[in-house]
Length: 342
Ligand code: GRG
Image 1 (cartoon, protein in one colour):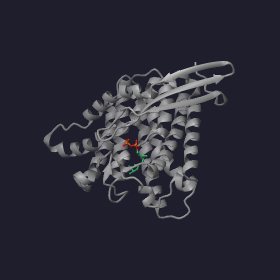
Image 2 (cartoon, rainbow, N blue to C red):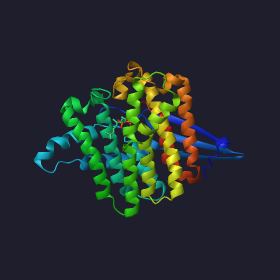
Image 3 (cartoon, rainbow, N blue to C red):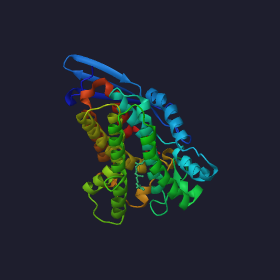
C-alpha cells in the first residue's frame, strides 16, 4: 500500500517523449510516473504508467465524441460540421479522462461515465470557440488549426458553441445508463452551475473586466481562474465520482483535489504562454504577454509560479490520500497537468 503522508513522501516523475495522447496536429509527451514512498524503514514503490492509461482510453473517448455530433438530416449538416470541426480538432481530453478515472476509482465503469465525459468536452470546446471570437480573445489558431469562426464565420461559430452547450446536457440526460436518476440529476446541476455566473461565464466576465484594470491582485486572479478554468475540472472529477457511486464526503474530497489541480492547470497555462512556442501550444503563444494581461508569472515571477503550481498539485494529491492505490490515475494526471508541454 502507498502511504501519502506528506513527510514520508518522495515523488519521482520521469518523462519520456514518446508519442502519447495526441491530437492530429500535435504530439504530446508520454508520462511514466513512479512514486516511491519512504516511511521509517518501510519502502514501498508503486508505479503507474499514465501513458498506457491514456492510450487505453483515447480511442473510446474519440469514438464517443465523434458519434455525439453526427448530423441526422441535410438541414443540420452545416451546424453539425462546425460543432464537430472544433470538437474533433484534437485536444488533450483531460476533462473526459478525469471524469472516467474518478468514476473508476469508486468502482464505476467507463460506460457509466462516458456520456458525462463527452458533455464535459463539449462544454470545454464551446468555451474555446467563444473565447477565440473577435469580441473575446480574437484568436485565429486553436488546437493547431484555424479557429471555428475563421472557417465558418462568426455567426455560425457562435451557434456551434451554443449547440454544443445545449447538446451536452441532452447527452448526459439521454445517454447515461446504469446510474440512478438522482445521481444523473446531481451531475446535470453541477454541469449547469459550472457554466453560469459562478462558473465559466462569470470567470470570463471578470477576466474581461480585469484586462483594462490596473492593480489586479492575486485574489482577483484566483477568483477568475477558479471559475474560468478550475470549475470545469472540478465538475469532471466530482461528476465522475458521483457516477461511480461515491459518498458525499468522497465527492467533497474529489472536489478539493480538483480545485487545486484546476488552479495549477491555469498556472501551468500562464507559464506555457511565456515559455512555449505557438507550434507546441497549437494556439498563439505569448498572447497574455502581448495583451499585458495579469497572469501568475506577471504577479509572482516565473520561478515562483512554478513553485506555486507544484504546491497546488501536492496539496491536491493529499486530498486523495484515503483512496490509496485506487487514486493512481488521478495522481498521475495531477503531475501531468504541471509537467505538460502544451
Ligand atoms: C458561453 C456560457 C458561455 C461561457 C463561455 C468564453 C468563456 C465563457 C470562457 C472562457 C473559458 C476558457 C477558454 C478558459 C481557459 C481554460 C483553458 C486553460 C483552456 C485550455 O484547456 P486545454 O489545455 O485545451 O485542456 P485542449 O485544447 O488540450 O483541450
